[in-house]
Image (cartoon, rainbow over all chains, first blue to last red; front, top):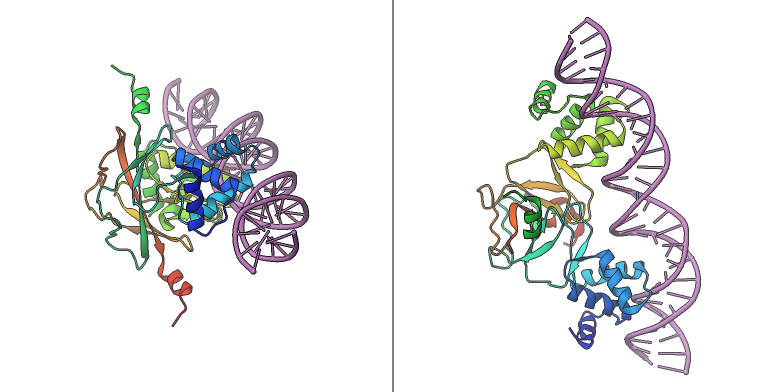
Length: 144
Length: 144
DNA sequence: AAGCAGTCTTGACTCGTTCCAGTCTGTCGG
DNA sequence: CCGACAGACTGGAACGAGTCAAGACTGCTT
């Protein structure tokens, strides 16, 4: 995605346009499912010195603005992706932690139908499929 | 659940029967969705001095043995519950973190049907419904 | 061009969790 | 019943992701 597009995305969310923000946004677009540490390294490779604090802050702001989505499978560090608002889910490899996108099986947007929600007002259903990725499956079962 | 039942549960998993393990097992049965810190306090109230290390170790062992299930919604600490193997899901309150059980909407066991799993071998589908619990909903919208 | 609200930098710090070495204790063979 | 040993527990240190705080800096508006 071109820099001017990213700029207009930020402007559209009435956020200030700063170098760190553009770099973070670009990094997440280029590397979906990257963790915070990887993003910090990507941003630094792009801009030079940037404090991890700035990256954390930018990630939180962009997430709250709805420009990014934060995903955090149990036992893993936070990861971010730029696909928002299209209600897709994820497969996570138990062995190496790789994440892949999965379209919503149900298809229609909410995809949330708890049989009994105990009075909770549910606004999102998050689905995580746990399994083994092709690479790890091959590495773990060398028999035959 | 009676102590002798817990004992046979441990024996059935070919695990040693120790006081900390019985206490942890009992605490999780009595307080589903409790976090580690709460469990440590419960166990100590029961037995006196127990190192947090022992509790962490017991929780991991019991989880690996399939006697407990660990749930860890994004941004929260680990919680444990004793309901295993019945494929139910959870509603989590965004405001206070309360967790409630929700029966699987689909009903049948696997409940996993990713449209395209990218070659992953999927063995579990975890569903987390995010929303607001009745208490927080009332507290957050005092209008009217 | 000026001023301000909002960002970024630096560095210390919290908190959940894990690692390590040593001691203790269920459990099993005699 | 008793000794021996693998496995469990203790205490303390360490780790890493993430947060807090104070001050310097910079987009944005006028």
